[in-house]
Amino acid sequence: SSINEGKIGSDSALYVHNAGFIAYTDGAVVLDGVVNKRDLQGFYVGGLIAEAASTYKIYNSVNEGNIYPNGFYKFSDRDAYRLGGLVGYGSSSSNKLFNVVNRGNVYYNARNSAYIGGLVGHSRKDSVYNAFNYGRIDVAVDSALGDWNSSKGAFFFAGGILGTGSNSSVVSSANYADVNYVNKKSLKTKVRVAGVVGSGSNGSIAQTVNYGNVYARVPVSAEDVVVAGIVTDSKKVNN
Image 1 (tube, helix red, strand yellow):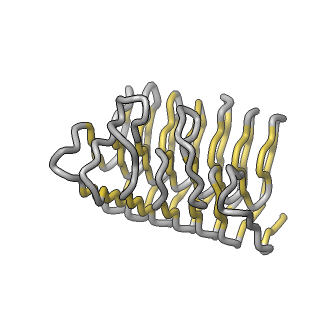
Image 2: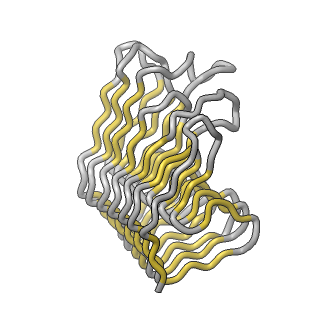
């Protein structure tokens, strides 16, 4: 097994990837029996992997460090924070997480849109099995720009397991922590907050439980806010 206990940091003004083990990879990766124990801060952040542009597989691994944004701001379609207890962003398909745990809290209080998850912030076609999140997710928005459907809109997807998980499956897993979203100003944002998967289009969930409270406080003017105990949108949820 491998353990990271060293401090990892960067200039807060940078568009930066930070992770306990792999900041960025465009080749297939396998992590087995690794543990991150340090807090991390950045734009794409994961306790184990910040961004994987190719397939990743993570087995028998744990994150114990808290995850934070770094305050970087530059709005465009691509520039959304990706924060996850294990992985910030997995842009490839056929990724696997098996027998993994996140114990670190994930905090967000920056200006950009964001994908935030207890295990993975933004996933595409992940297979998640026997995965557990014990770290709370706290999202506080007070300076996002514009309406979500404009050229300078803001969106926030947060989930106890996956922030967003299009075409992903979650099986025999559980979230034990609270997921909180607070919009402190009258901002019309697109929000998806859930105990397991914030937004899970074309995905599936089976034999998975949420034990955490899910809370959203939004201004009266908010027009597109969905909150759920398991998932805000998914084609298939089984017992």
